[in-house]
Image 1 (tube, rainbow, N blue to C red):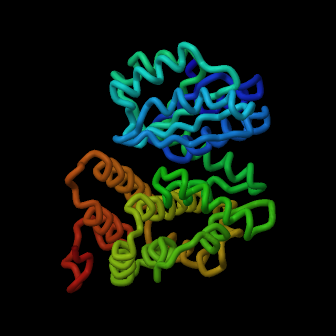
Image 2: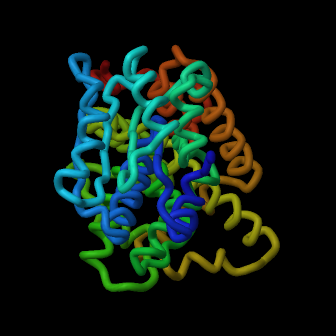
Image 3: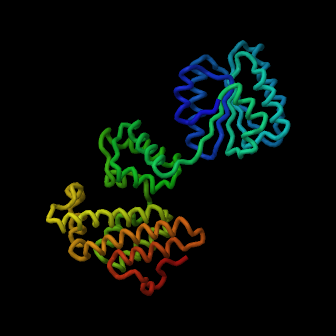
Length: 346
């Protein structure tokens, strides 16, 4: 039976299968799925867990031996078999297929492996495990699925994160669910349950940087090209991801587009402004007076074009693209001026 990760919990509540294969190249989901199987096995009475590491020199006779050892101890066994190489090889494939076709009584087999290609997924041993139990593939999360996952993890931890806070963490971890999960667990320990906005998040999330992306957006909105280049250079040197930098620039420009539209129609600033720190509201008002609405709209299109170029050109100098965009947002034109000595050095 093939399942998706989100279906596993419900399937386990219906009872344990004889075998589980958890494979894929997304570590957090793989670890969580394997832990769910182990927990359900313990709750069902499989108190004896035996870990088998099937490396290059692994003796596949151990699979049958560990299963037959049940009669000596009269306990139910969970065989926790890891495939560090991803595939069991010819001998291992035969051993797994034979085990799955005739599973020993009182034994459950959990196999964890990395990503398996199409040929491996169609192999006899995977098909045998599929018939005997559950095959679950896990994949990296992107886009909306990643945002939904982060939102759900916040809720599970008792935190209601704003959309902006979710997107900030998404940009920061670049799809690394293990890193995101660690940050969320830490936030749950350090903060009381309730609403979590971006300012609260960045004040708590670990960051050894001398500058952060909000220092960059503040410099951009102030029209300070020199400080913008300095901060961008520092962020690059401190290992900040290009995705997080672009998110910060785009988010600031998007707020300005909404503010400029509201101002043109004689309306009050966007509702979110009163929740910003007073000094940041002052920066937004200053930027609103300095740059026209059509120009903010053009800058937002520049952000979209920069995003597309960064994603579509593998050999592109992403930091050069970000530098040109940052200078444009300060109001000094789309063309990049001469760089200060040492700025953005490789």
